[in-house]
Amino acid sequence: MAQLVIPDLKDKAVLITGASTGIGAALARAFAAQGAKVGLHYNSSKDAAEKLAAEIKAAGGTAVLIKADATKSAEMRAAVDATVKAFGRLDGLINNAGGMVARQPYQEYTEELYDQVMDLNARSVLAASHAAIPHLKTAGVALSSTPPRSRRATALAAAPDSMAHPRPLSAM
Image: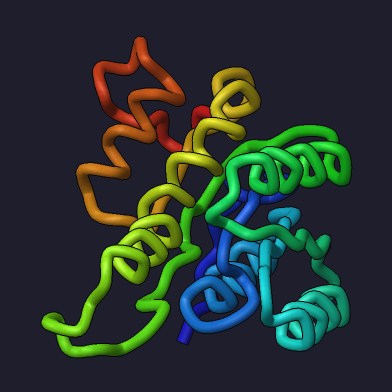
């Protein structure tokens, strides 16, 4: 089978939230394999993030570890700033951080648990996107693994003159 090659990603600086495990780790490997410089965001999975960074670097890729609590706006601003400092710019953002926090029957959900779930799955997108948009307006496009309405809103915010359509990677 032929290997996928996306030359538009070569040397692009991308921050992937929730990159230490699961879909985020797969995205990090895929972007690095295309020559992108990858900011590997993690919160509690430090060992997995370090292992992934070592794997990417051993394959000739570029990766930097970025620790931050995705539910905290200040920490996500610091994560974006650390990515920009490491790579000199930010060309893309993938909002992948998320999870269930706790698996409980719906009738046992408390308002506190609901807030935790929403902070991790929704506020994190807002926090990372707000921090990234100033960089993305000049250099790239926001990409997201969140529901389609969130992707469209993020793309519109990153490129308001684009009529809600993100620029293709080839235009970056």
